[in-house]
Image 1: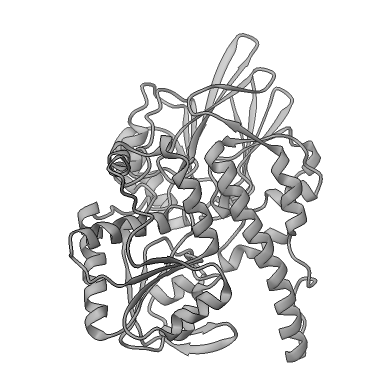
Image 2: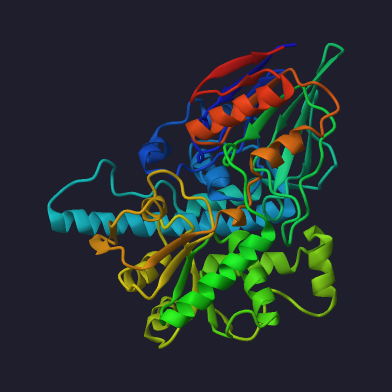
Length: 468
C-alpha cells in the first residue's frame, strides 16, 4: 500500500491549513484555509496545486477561517464533492464564510477607490477572492457527521471525527485506509485545544495511528493556568477603569468571544470588577453565540451545570450585542469606561479597526489581546511594541497600554500537545509537525524526539511524502 501526503498549507506557518491525501485512487483534502499572515496572503490568489474537480472529498476539522476560508474558491474553481464536518462546524462555517465574502467584496471596492484616489494600482484586479454567491454554492456540499461514528469516504477509506477541544464542533480526524488486506491510519490533529477550558469538552484521547499530523502553534512554550487568566483580566479591567479609559479586546468571533463573556460573567458574579457596559461588537460573533446556545450537547460538565441553574454566560446585565454600524459607532460616544469586544482577533479587518482608531492614542485605554497574533498582522505589530501603526490608511501613535494574555489560548501548549500524543497505545511510524511558525514547529519537533524517540518531520510548504 502506498499513500501520498502533500503539505499545501500551514507548513512552517500558522494559517492556510491544507493537506492532501492520495490513496486507493482517491484524493482527499483535509481543510482548505485562508492565509492571514501578510507575507503569505499572495498564496490566496495563486491557483490551487491541483485541479479542483479532481478532489473527491474535503474533510474539515473546524470552522476557523484559516481552515475553511478557501472552500468557496475551491468550489468556484470546480469542486463539487462532499465536505464532511460536524453539525456545529457546518453552521459556524456558513457564518464565517459569508462574513469573509462580504468583507472581501467591500475590501475590493474600498481598495479600488483608494488606489484611484492615490493614483496607483494594486497587484490584483479589484475583484474579491470569492463572493457571497460562491459561498451560497458551497453550503449545499456540507455533509454533517457525528463524533466517533465512522464515515465511509471512498472505497476502503473511513474517517472518524473525535473531539479536538479547540472550538465548538472542532474535530481531530482519524482516517483508516484498507487495501489488499493491509490497514494504515493517518491522524490529522487540526487544532488541539487545552484540557479544563470552559465551555467545550476536552480533546479526545486517540488509541492508535500510524502517521500523525500535529499542530504546533504554541509548540515552543507553556501556557499559564486558567486562574491566572481570570486574574489578569480582572486586573486589566480594574486598572483601566481607574485610569478612565476603555478596554478594547480584539477577539475571534468563534470561541474566544464566547470565552471572554464567560470570564467577564464570572468576575461580575464575584463582584471582582465594576459592573460596566460590555459590548460584543461583532455581528458574526453574535450569530455564532446563537449556535452555541442550541448545541448544549457539546458543552463540558461545568458549562452544563452552569446552564442547568438557569444561567448563561451569554446573557447578563450590561451586555449588549451590537448589530448595525450605527450602533457600533455610538459606542465611541459613551462617557466612562466600557469593555469593547470586537473582531477581528488579529486586527486584520472588521470593526476592531475603528475602535483602535478611537482608543490607541489614548494613554488611559488598554488594548487587551486574548488570542494568537500571526506574523505580519496588525495585531502582531502592536503586541511587539511598535510605536506607530497604520490603521485604515492613516498612521497612529500607540499610546494606549497594550496587554497580551497568553494563557487564554484555545491551542494546547508544548506539554499539553505531548500529553495528548502520549495517549497513543502504539508507536507511530512518523509524526509530521505542522501549523506553527518555523521556530515553534522545529522546537516542538525536537521536543517530541527528546521525550519519545519517535521519528519526526517538520515539512516545508509543498513537500510530498510517501507513506508505506
